[in-house]
Amino acid sequence: MTTHDLAATRDKGRNADKERWTEWQPDSFLSWPPKLWPISPVGIAKWLYFYLVPWALVYVAISVPVLVYLTPSMETMKTLNWDWIAFIFARNSALLIFFVSCLHVPLYVKKSQGFDRKYNGRWLGRNNPNFLFKNQLLDNLFWTFASAVPIWTAYEVLTWWMFANGYIPYVSFHQHPVYCLAILFAIPLFRNIHFYLIHRPIHWPFLYRRVHSVHHANVNVGPWSGLSMHPVEHIIYYSGVLIHWIIPSHPIHAMYHMIHTSLAPSQTHTGFEKFIIKDGIEIRMEDYYHYLHHRYFECNYGGGGILNVDAWFGTFNDGSPEAMEKMNQRIMSRQQRAQSKDQSS
Ligand SMILES: [Zn+2]
Ligand SMILES: [Zn+2]
Image (cartoon, rainbow, N blue to C red; front, side):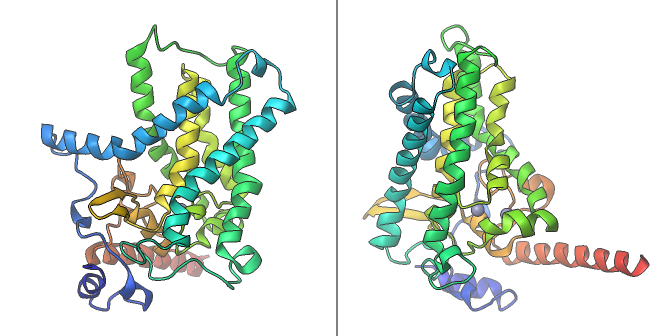
């Protein structure tokens, strides 16, 4: 493992608290994510591969059968009725349990790869008063099933009811295949920007203390931490799907958007850079940059990733000593501004 000495030599004690010495850092953090600028065919191909393989394709592959086989007919969904709403709630719960368990059980229960590629050198918190029931896993399960799944289901039910009654614009894949594929392709990009834009305001002190601190109790994240949020944050977080109430969409667009919003957080909060299936077969989990957000709060609001929206706004931190220094300077100058404002008032 290249990990810990790498962190140590890079830090030279500047930001080195005890925990940081045991962190895994990706070897290639300076060249990631693939750069789109200057535009070149190789750069575009690398970016497309990074964008689609495997996760965007995995979520499409889940969304299609869920829409076709596990969603009531539009005829049924014309009228709001507890039978089909309860079915969608149960289906969403089952889907989430299955998907998240595929990550949580091998990595955190069986500990199949130990700490190899794990960003944080500890397991999930127990006997920790920062969590409900003093247990990180139970806390995460509580927020996920008491809040995330009901709110996800509510957005989904309303969206289907609107589609079924023709209240929102529908577009056919057969008549407009290029438009439909373009929208499908753009959904994770849209999510990246939407996430950044809703994430910045919930870091304002008023909302952070009351709302976002629930999610940030997870400094050392695990797959169930992804959707562990306050209900107000869930309402804001899932609001991206409302785009399909405005722009002409097919139900698969809304389904993909909701599946992506619901399943991707467990993948991006696994806490591991890679999931080693067996020797030579590894899956890229991401998301080092969102992990740094959980560690340091003041950076990577967009979670790094495909568009790297943080780079546009000067909040990107790639984990290098230079980026840490830049982040610290930003925090210090903000504190100085706040102090001088206090003194002058
Ligand atoms: Zn997070
Ligand atoms: Zn945050």
